Amino acid sequence: MTKKQLQSLAKQHGTPLVVIDHDIIRRNYAEFKKHLPKVQGYYAVKANPAPEIVRTLHKAGASFDVASLPEFMLVYENIKHLLPKEQQDFIWDKIIYANPTKPKETLQALDQYKPLVTYDNLNELKKIKQYAPHAGVVLRLRVPNTGSMVELSSKFGCDPGEAVDLIQAAFGMGLVVEGVSFHVGSQCTNFENFVQALNMSAAVLKEAKSRGHEIKILDIGGGFPAHYNQHVKPFSALARKINAEIDRLFPKDMQILAEPGRFLVATAATSIARIIGKAVRDGKPCYFIDDSVYHTFSGIIFDHCQYHLKAFKKGKTEICAVFGQTCDGLDTISQSEELPDLEIEDLVYSENIGAYSNASATWFNGFPPAKVVHVNQ
Ligand SMILES: *Cc1c(COP(=O)(O)O)cnc(C)c1O
Image 1 (cartoon, protein in one colour):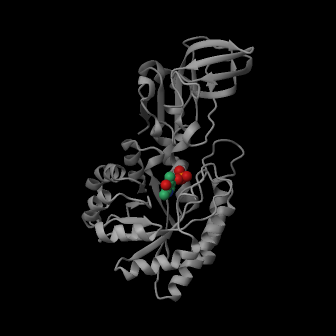
Image 2 (image 1 turned 30 degrees about the vertical axis):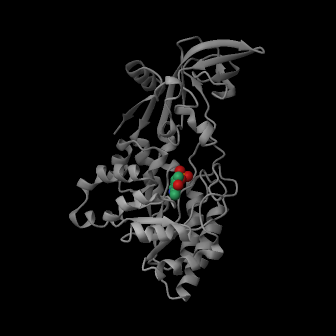
Image 3 (image 1 turned 90 degrees about the horizontal axis):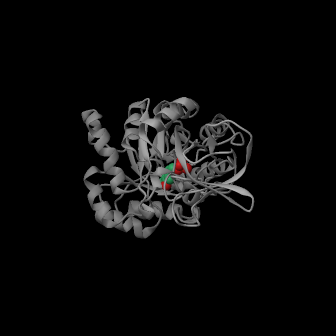
């Protein structure tokens, strides 16, 4: 998107505004497929659940990772009429339910679809057996999340040492373990996490096989880093490592899937906000904008992600602070941005804000979430 296009969209739709460019989503998905050709991408819907994105990625060939019943229904309702007849009865190619903990009502509602669901402990397995006996199951392993922007390993995944017992327990109950999965942590820039996780998975699969259980699916999760800045190494370098380990560790006919969320959508959105107030504090210019950390910038809190603001105006920049519109001190977007001298009503924008941003926006303080517009759909 050029600055001109962004400005004209802001003029047309008002602010705060989030612009999602579907050309970039398609490009990101194509890059994913190009470098990981043996891996089927299941887009992790929670990164940005816009139905427009679901439809674009479905058309591009993606499948979906959902983590709640509403997400499952969102995907199902948007793709089911587009599926060939024989696939309507077999949802695994298109959807995995990858939240290891599910309320019993969700399992009851999912059972009719014969879903593929994850688990990481015995209690969950018993629940699946009781409430969704037609589900296939995937065991989630706990793997190192070292250095990832968002850590997931303290909440999810069984200890590798208990993995094979949990696989046997499932078969013992009459369920079928179809796969193992892991997640290296979101925005994983330490590629060794993937190498270690693949090696741990291979060890689990090998031991399961020695006990008579051949497992066909390997789900390498999400965590593929979005290119927020020049310090993020290229995706091709990560893919090379992953491909080499997959070739070395797993049989040729292993079905490999992944759950990229951030990687597919982060770089596809730009937010535009308007300066609604201006002050000087301790000699530093402070701007107040009509968006907030409770809205499009929620990733600052929930996603540990820092977003930078840019001005459309040119001019000598100085260090300033940018605050959100709500009446909360926590609502600080940045204590040190470099912006030119701006006036009330000027616009600012923030790039790479498509993942875990408006997805977690609230109505706090009576302010509605920013309007979203989709371009190049
Ligand atoms: C959130 C999530 C993802 C997506 O992670 P990204 O880091 O955005 O790629 C994938 N799988 C599961 C199970 C998740 O919870």
